[in-house]
Length: 378
Image (cartoon, rainbow, N blue to C red; front, side, top):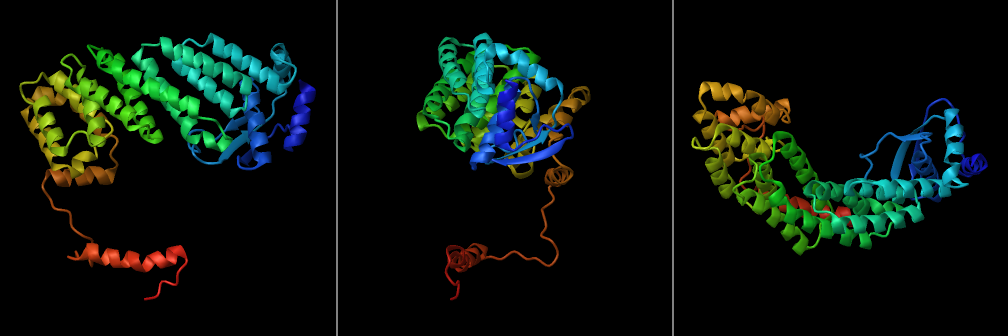
């Protein structure tokens, strides 16, 4: 194992130095991909010689940034991994396969498959996909299903950086989206605060992943029908119903007028304060800036706040702070101005142009030839 490491280090032109140093690799080059694969395989074995410094921020790119620092104990860990195989590749495959066999949840399995593909471990990838399909066929736990969608979407959307075959994964993910949508209205019923918050988080992340990979129209409609069923369900927890309404609104399945009417009903004086607050938080926890631009939504929220007595208003101040904490200082100022009915003014020296659309069209006509290699004259 040590000899194999030394051969790989020499091939990768990486020296095991104790001092930290930065390493940037380009996955489009053979040398960059080799370095990345080696470091990922060592991480599988618990040898964290390299640590990704931009994990999660470099998705969709062909570049990784690592911090390298060699520790003497890593040699001992490599020897301990000899039980899985005599080389780094075989040992990483063996260890990951053992972890796949022991995985208790669907989302854990997806993460392990993602790791196997990233590390170029074909045996572990094959074993992981088989286990993933078998587990998906048995799973009916909505939270587990939804939590598995984002990492699958990452593999499918960004797998081309490593020439990953994604057809099999795409079919599996689409099946999971549909199953999650079917299970969602039942999972959203009568939840306590902690369980509701966990499912809301999973819904938002799954929805973001679904938009990322742009599945077929049937799959997309299935997901949105599941959200609509949550919104319309009489026993759905208010926080989940508010989240479903926001996701449908962002997707264009709920018009501005319908959303304003819905908020007006859900936040009406006849609605229990706790239930109204839950719906409000579910809808606006990541969409507070909507109130700056959307007069209908702002009016519905304003009417609800005015309907609260002093004690209820004070009790819900922490909720309002949470919802509006996502707004920066400029957005908060603009929201206050909108609430007070102050019209936004153009900066000094600028005046509105009645034919602005036509002027912009002429501007684009002049830019077009420049962008496509023409001379732009005329």
